[in-house]
Amino acid sequence: MRRRLRTLRARLTVTLTIMALVVLVVAGGIVFLGVRRVLLGGLDKTLASIVQAEIASSADGPGGRPHLHEMAVGDVGGYQRFAEIEDEDGVVLVTAGSLGALVTGPDLLARAVEGTVVFGDGRCGDDPCRAIAAPHPLRSSPGRRLAVIVALSKRPVERALRALGAIFAVTRVIAVGLAAWAAHGLSRGLIRPLE
Image (cartoon, rainbow, N blue to C red; front, side, top):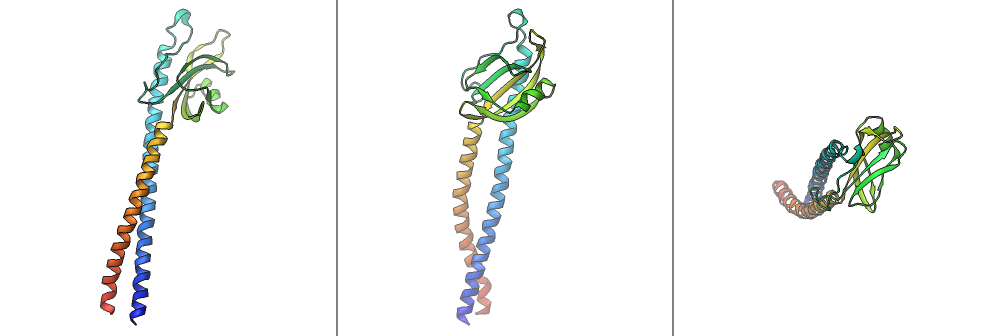
């Protein structure tokens, strides 16, 4: 009888520990996804304000030609930036920024010159980036529609998410150890009346 109670206690301890681990993993995943969404939402808001400022001030250059403002590395909240003005055929008229050449899907430019503000992911040189494309009110000299595309590196967001993942991993190990200890004590208390 005593051996059966030990087996029951061990099974109860393992079951309670696994249940605690599942709850921790699910809760950690939900928090991680929520933080990721907030960080990328903040990046999108920053991009929207930059592209609005670029559009508003890009037509005040000599001869009414569109231009962009140079920004030093780290001038946008620690993010590296890239900006360009393209015509509807994808010809780059003006470029500025501290990142390498921007590579996004063709849909970004096509939708922007049609009049839609579009967010998308791409690469700026070796950096993963988040981009926004917006229609520009001016037209190029042959009358082609223009779009302003601004991109920010996603590396700061990725670093923050990696740090959060590491914190979750360490706290999960500690929490599972505490849960196992508590489950052992709980199962011992539950089995005691049967002894």
